[in-house]
Length: 213
Image (cartoon, rainbow, N blue to C red; front, side, top):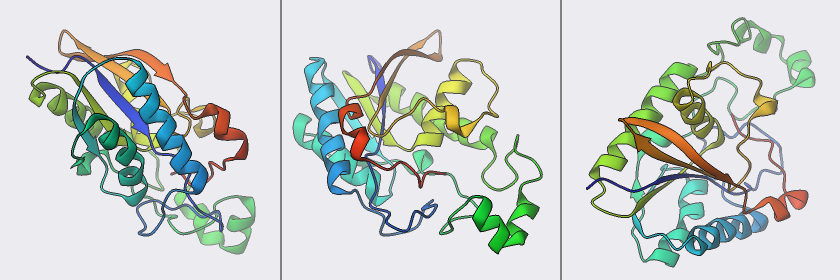
């Protein structure tokens, strides 16, 4: 039997005092609030009364730390899944915005095709690797649910591709808050969203969500 349900959990708030685009850079760990958000996500999963058979996470520190409370809650090891990592981006380590473009006009040369996008990993490639990772995890889990701890854009691309929506989008309209849980089931071989929860929402007022790709 394959898994019963698949939960995509976003990591908690990252300690990022400089406000840079942290992409896949080393050393960006959860803030104190981020750890609290991760705990909230683990408690939410436990409150559902569902068995969790497998736990996977992106290899980055912030997702490994966010997966830790889930591992403890369910007595699981954290498996590393490279395909659910943050997308690469030409602007990593930079503060991106109008002021950044004024300081470094060369940045504008990478903004010619937002629909691809021209400044980073193509949306279609992100969606494809997320679909592959999710469906493989589903089929290889003998029983219970699967939890995958990932990042905002990869989760959003999995949602949009599964829903048959166009992948280009307004980043400001992503429905994928810190430590949110987007749940899927596989129906007729395809992922279908069955739930979305924001267990860290009560902590969001004190959190900064500004370094995601």
